[in-house]
Length: 211
Image (cartoon, rainbow, N blue to C red):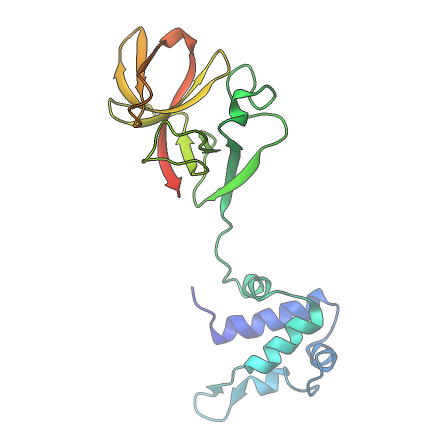
């Protein structure tokens, strides 16, 4: 969708209505000639009539006079981009503390930040990496997005595991069986760790990282 001639003028009309003004009064408030936005000024001579566009200066003045942002004007024109969805974000070290997850291992309570994702869903959450067990793949402070309902996690996937004991671990999936899950670190200083599956609330695949 583009900012067409019709949409630009429609946005000016909408802005005037929002301010409780006529387009003439809106022009005067912005220090412009009262006829600047009149319908008669929107087309010039010709067959068919030639579209006339408001100047950049006149648009800037009405935005300043009304306190509207450029994105707000685009929204009035029906050309605003869809809002980015946000998902919960928490530091991985904090994720091991009380109060951030409920008994089912789901995000709850205060203290969560947010990180943007174009198409969020309930199974996604964001975490900040702490520690160096996954260096050089993930470093301290990196943001990751995890899908807690990824149903086809396989050996070699990068995952986050939430345990019944309150740990939240970002690791690679070394092995998985009906009874246990073995997690490995990229950093060789950290040995593999095997967990009983009964001790795992959820295991999600890491979908995205911001470094």
